[in-house]
Image (cartoon, rainbow, N blue to C red; front, side):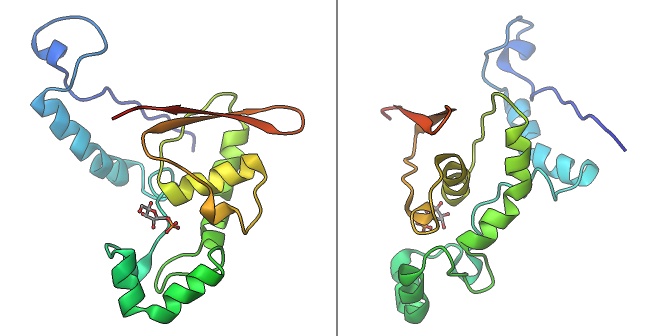
Length: 169
Ligand code: F6P
């Protein structure tokens, strides 16, 4: 059944001070609400979509490890990933191929919007970027997605123009 969920943002400094306007920081209570929102959403909306659809590549048993730690603990895996990064599936986790499949519904959704902003993780963005930029399986896992940069893709007839807006922080 169709449903629409709406929520105000958490209480802002302006709310507390009875001021009008839309760009103030959150108050401490507002921060608390923001932190609680994911739980509220899973409870009342569910957490299959959209909460998990854009999750980062699931690195399974390697979650929280550094690349050096992985190389030491799972040297064969480390090598295998280097040889075929697209197909390598983390133990108990996902491969880029798995991630591409997981993102299919998101891509269908994206195609229906004229303008859309997605804030997500590196591997997730690589897959979405690769779709629009027509990258193949060898290129996709190595696509450059720098931190603190807004990437703008403008599809034209035969290719996609890209602009990178980097923030110096
Ligand atoms: O380190 C940040 C991160 O987004 C990890 O969460 C993720 O596993 C990794 O980058 C993806 O990059 P690569 O596939 O190149 O290891």
